[in-house]
Image (cartoon, rainbow, N blue to C red):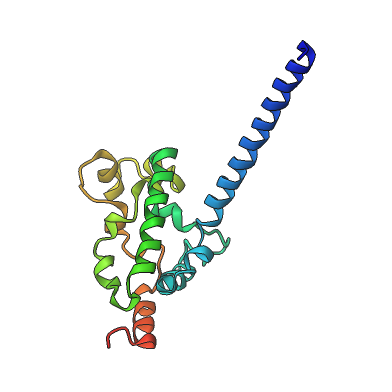
Length: 181
């Protein structure tokens, strides 16, 4: 093979590899985006009350500007990109596993609400509320939080955040489907 053909083959191979990488990344990025929102999460029937209460909340768009947080803004760790992706994969895999292997009527959502620290991350809150520390500097409970004087997470004080009237929707679902029988 001549030098010109060899160089053309290498350049062609590099271009094809580059295109493959870009297309693959676009697919991954699109998958991450699509699977981050309530319309995707509601695919699992068990999430219906959570999505309804989310849509009632300020974080679900029930605010004057219609701004919405994605489910993964709160329910995945945002410490860094790798942690975020691993947290999303772990959470998604777990949710799929539970949906496929368990009877939804046996899920005790009230008990799960008591474990909110396990699936709501401060790094998610602070990724949106970036200026909270400077705005509350030296004042109130937020100042104690940022100085490390309290051993709690955001959701400990802001329990209903993201899911307005969740208890109401959980009870409606329970009685509509007779999960307790």
